[in-house]
Length: 200
Length: 170
Image 1 (cartoon, chains in turn orange, red):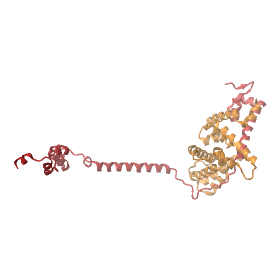
Image 2 (image 1 turned 90 degrees about the vertical axis):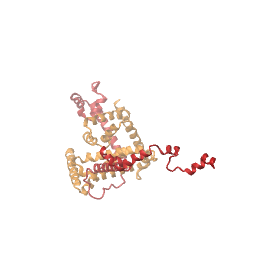
Image 3 (image 1 turned 90 degrees about the horizontal axis):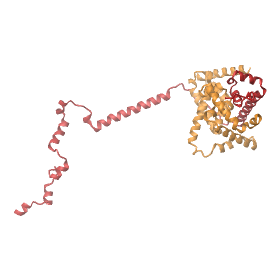
Image 4 (image 1 turned 135 degrees about the horizontal axis):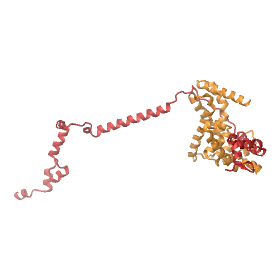
């Protein structure tokens, strides 16, 4: 049932991507509405900054709109869009590393403001801030590739096959990196303390 | 590599099962299907990872910016960047060649053409240079020391070094 639904969705996306490639603006708009939250989250998981994630999301869709005619397989639109987003995030992070001194407002400070939604309580804001700090600590323990694979699998909810397509690697490479990442995460992260206690 | 721990899958193989159950050998896969303890470990770890992902999703601040697509139709020009690079390189090469030949022309016009030895006598510029060299084979400084320079002033020299023979006669 779920597989059938997923196949229908893939067909729908492919149809929209094909029409968008022929210059149909409305269909691209529909694709954008379907994926903008996912792309925004993907960018946020990598930048930990709302403003940067929003800017990256905008850039990703502008780039995708400009290049959609070069997409030869519309059924691979999702992987193609994620590839653009991941590459854009990597470019951004590379630039941010060099512009670190100019950015006096660190992501940590910024995130504290950003995490504070007006309709949420102060405790919730603190909890979110603490959560992202722990996520950062967890991801800092992983290598660049492990981080990429772990984030795509468990935060962006992509399967092995999709991750391989997004990163342009083969599936066994992805599995190896994922295995290494999980080994570190299970052994060291506070998120898995309960699990560690349960198996000891 | 030790696969089993007291007859159960080791932690390493539990993680491999979380990554992809197909990674397990047939024997291990059969064990996982039958063993509640190992199954429980795989399920617990998977559930923790899923909870982590869901919590991350809920902790992302909401998207406030309205994402817009640019005006106009999507571009179909795929090779524009490489064209720009090619045109730039060609223009640069043209400029280098232009200045190279221009420089040669200004610095040494006589080098621009190579003449046959029998035609050298007809070259006025060359013959003029040769005749000047024959007439004045030494440098100007040497002629000044010798008193044979072209702008040598006889009166001035007479003033500096008077002719004693003339004084004596007068």
